[in-house]
Image (cartoon, rainbow, N blue to C red; front, side, top):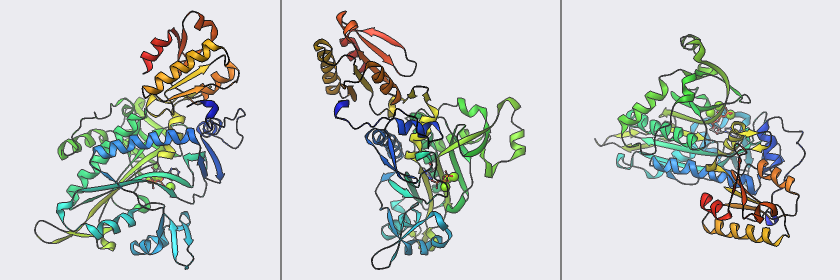
Length: 439
Ligand code: ATP
Ligand code: MG
Ligand code: MG
Ligand code: MG
């Protein structure tokens, strides 16, 4: 992508309305724009990162055997009357009337709808286990939308729903998601700690929140410090092996970790003092096992192996990709701007033409741009006529992991500068070496 043809509305001024660093940087880097309170447009750069986060989530969900579908954003109130949640959900639900005066709503979550879908077509235990997920916009009329996309009213959620014949099968399904979540967040360079959590309005008995420690976090959390040193499960774990899944979950839940609602002061006090962590955290994922809470009112049953009808055992599993964009910036930035991990960077490489109009510099940039693009590398080529200083600032602000600085002086010696965003280190290399390194 040539910057001169891109849409990157950078803000040089620090926006006054934003009080945490991720919100400020997302506005300054031209990633989002507020359209109403808690409602944002995702500009091209922001959308690129959001899509990358979604793809990591998708890959890790698919690895477990979960299957993607897409449910609508608008739901019928009748569906929610069936579960009894239409009245319970309260003011967070955006209620809408259509032209026929029918009660509709903008979905805040999809337990009801997925249960209705599965009830209609799954009749036998032979179709189980089943885990269906989608990545879809949700709306919750938050009392206090704030911090940009961290707590917005319209936000993206990956929500998965598992269906099993019995509690044992459901536990296996829960464990698979637990392990997939550990891998998902680790691939984003995040240390997300699974903490014993309250089940809230979803209801049920087993639940973990995945929390990233950050001073700007809205949750108060308590955990053992060793969590920060634990290595995530490898890519080749066997999700079909129920015992292996349970062992991994046991390993990740023996140390103390709990959210405020589930905090047990005695258990926390038993942790060696220097390992006790009472901190603030950002909830990036939340998983639940709730048994037959929804299958009962929806009468969602299958025939078991013995020919008897059984209520489905269910779980639900949410991740907030849009909140994750903010969480990742909270976790990784400096004075100059965002520092994207390679896995989610909007572009892997920036080429900075430091003297547009100099024929040698233009040619070297064009050549590198063409070759890297052909090799499948995502490149943002700064071919604008901004000053060098402003180009450096932009590339650092938007967090490009690798930057190739091409200027007349070094180029006269056949060299370009290769800069690593994370530590600012620079190295003189030939254009050919730069290409070999980055392709
Ligand atoms: P919170 O405690 O922050 O209000 P929640 O517990 O209400 O979140 P869940 O119902 O567990 O949220 O939804 C699953 C995931 O969706 C959350 O873990 C979070 O990542 C994301 N999420 C929830 N509410 C928002 C929001 N208002 N803005 C952005 N992401 C959100
Ligand atoms: Mg909430
Ligand atoms: Mg919560
Ligand atoms: Mg939650």
